[in-house]
Image (cartoon, rainbow, N blue to C red; front, side, top):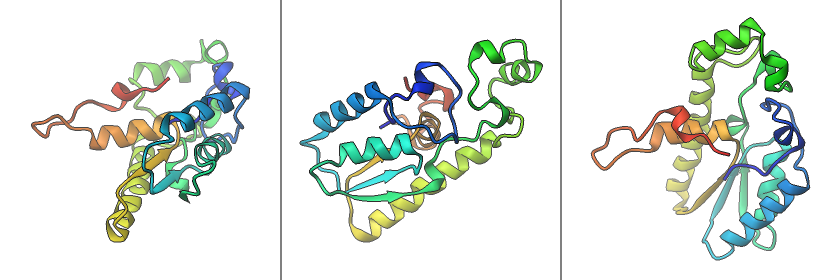
Length: 174
């Protein structure tokens, strides 16, 4: 599950490593997710340490006492100098245009390399899956960020014939 809305989401600001809390709508979204999942068996919650994900996970976990693993590796990407800016502020910046022209494959100025970010997210997910196999845990909820989920889906979503079901940007989440 992706974390609930923050003020930065509402203002369409680039939000990566910035530790922004949920806004009122984000809290409501987390409560709706909690209610939707209330009858689902969840043995473990893997969560990013960033406030917006932690708040969402804690709301989902209300009244359930599900064990949580908080892992930095599933936190959102560091967007460097683009962090906290919106499209209007980035539009016209040649570095932003170069990133657009690269199809989103370039590193943000001062930020995290996209390939390293994806590998980091997958490593965090795989560590928890390995633990689950060892402890015979069958159901894990992941509460993280859009980029984290996109990274995991790109790596693990496959068609029936075993070929990848899509690429990173095919899994964009609202």
